[in-house]
Amino acid sequence: MASTEDKPANKENTSSWKDSIYNPRTGEVLGRTASSWALILLFYLVFYCFLAGMFALTMWVMLLTLDDNVPRYRDRVPSPGLVIRPHSLDIAFNKSKPLEYAQYVQHLESFLQSYNDTEQEKNLDCTRGDYFNQEDTEEMIKKACRFKRSSLSLCSGLSDTNFGYSEGRPCILLKMNRIIGLRPRGDPYINCTVKRENPIQMQYFPSEGSIDKMYFPYYGKRIHENYVQPLVAVKLLLTKEDYNKELAVECRVEGSDLRNNDERDKFLGRITFRIKVVE
Image 1 (cartoon, rainbow, N blue to C red):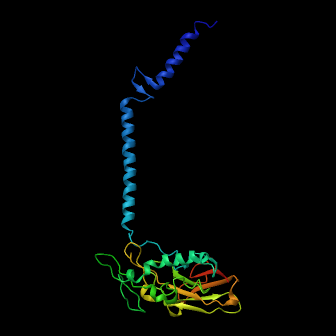
Image 2 (image 1 turned 90 degrees about the vertical axis):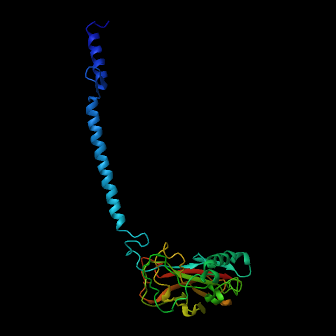
Image 3 (image 1 turned 135 degrees about the vertical axis):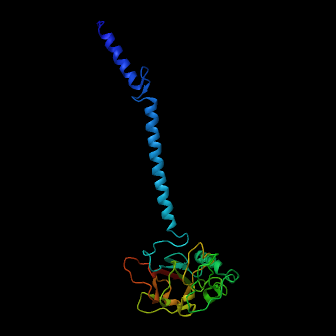
């Protein structure tokens, strides 16, 4: 049986624990009076408002140094990559089965919609061979040079709606990635080769696979909204000896200072794709 001396001790311990949360004698909550809590809360309120103000000021100053239309740092991608349409690095089809190449034809037709003559009439007929430099104006909207799909001739999809796939002589469209402010030196053009001993005849549209300087520089998506990249179409003139074989085709940007031999980036200024036509 517990002694009567233990009861006051237990009562004192309980009272001490409750007093640590709220002490009715001093009015303290968690060891602080109301005024003490008010002061410390005021301190942290002022402190965090100061930090928020410093952060907002820093962001505001940083945003003042940025341009809404042009990235501040553009040194990581000095040269453009090269891409193809149809958007596939492995093109294989039977020229006698329209369903097998229909996807490629539809992709090309869809891609060329923005190059329709009716769309390109909105753009300017620029001077060939010269950069189309534009000064800053109040409107800030940059004009674009005209590139009509009809300039792709046999690969335009106008005279041959199958882009040569039905006859086993397919068209491949190539374009460079957009880089703001790029002005390539020299006269860039696209050159394609097949990795085998016997060369394959090819046709280029525009002639010689040229990329005119008038499509440079590019000023950015927001202020150069009507801009379209210049295209080069390559028509592979395959023969019966070329059918049923997988051919590796490499295309490069030549004739300028644009890089096309970086072993760390296989798509910088060049691209390799495979094509197989079944008879």
